[in-house]
Image (cartoon, rainbow, N blue to C red):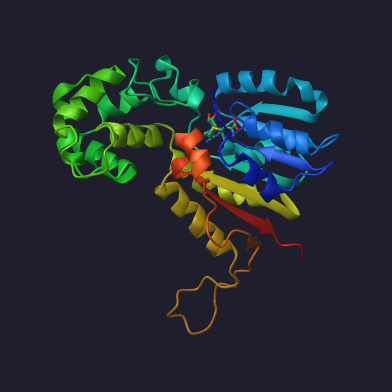
Length: 308
Ligand SMILES: C[S@@+](CC[C@H](N)C(=O)[O-])C[C@H]1O[C@@H](n2cnc3c(N)ncnc32)[C@H](O)[C@@H]1O
């Protein structure tokens, strides 16, 4: 079961209303989409995207009760502008990006996201395309592997881990990789927070396999482009690398000038396109974290397209 994170906060942020147009670009199990459709009854429309075909099948069942008000597409959200054009999606009143993987994906051993259950080292959200985590683990030169684990996992022991991985190659299974990483990092003696020693390496491989940060960077401008004046974009991120991208992009697009501070007069002619609604990110309440530990690192940022 996937519990939608910050559900009430998303409804408050996007203020769904009847006849509104909503795009859920990470429709997943359809939890947020269900709430948006209920709150925009009787005739709000929801356009949902997911790059995971099996998530879309779940969303299709979950959202069937709303009939013709729902339109689902198998697509990476970085194709948002193209999908909107091809399917003549009207400009939206609200757009949601709830980043990362769902509990359903994490809980399926055959998807290879979890180091706690054995499965093939896959980690692709879209299983129809792209290299798997095993391809990265088994093919990348040691230095590149270390850099990837350091950058996307913020793992201090990245070099030791990469060396051990290269020595143990080929590695095809999740538990095999988790054991190699645990042995290399000295199981918990890292001084970093008390998490499983493979957590950061698995996070790094998942981010790299799905090019999660690149996709986010390429999608934010398209998401703004899909809004109608006064429409809102809400982004839920789950780690600091994602949140930094969202925060910086929102800051830049909310400013009239983005010249470097040493520039005496403006030469960029940049015009603010959005207003920031959440000066600070909204985080889950303690009771939500209690009920759903996955929510603990969530941060919600919301912007509104200017009305001019
Ligand atoms: C956290 S879950 C969303 C859960 C959903 N909001 C709910 O309430 O059920 C994230 C979903 O986004 C999808 N996803 C992640 N990155 C994506 C991308 N670049 N393009 C399309 N879908 C993506 C994942 O496959 C997953 O199903």
